[in-house]
Image 1 (cartoon, helix red, strand yellow):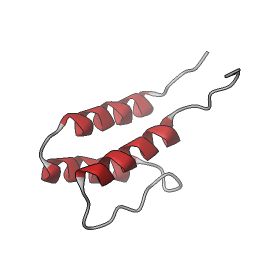
Image 2: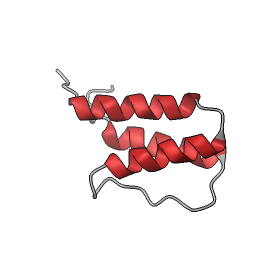
Image 3: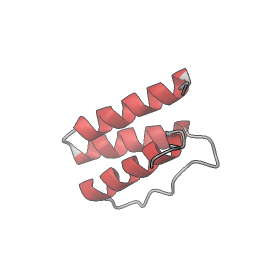
Image 4: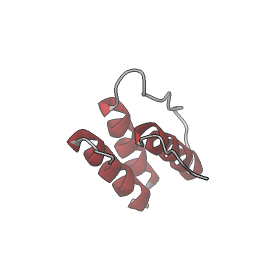
Length: 74
């Protein structure tokens, strides 16, 4: 059984909110906020100039870091 902490659920909900936002300025702000909430070892270096595609890539990387490992895939 996989148990997510309340903080992880909150971060994932922010990732979802960021993905749904259409304004790149707002997306960048949400991404910076998400990154500020991550533990130091999980933070991602975000470039000062970033595209929508770059934001999506970073959001995907954050989701991978927040997700528990998956076993027994065969």
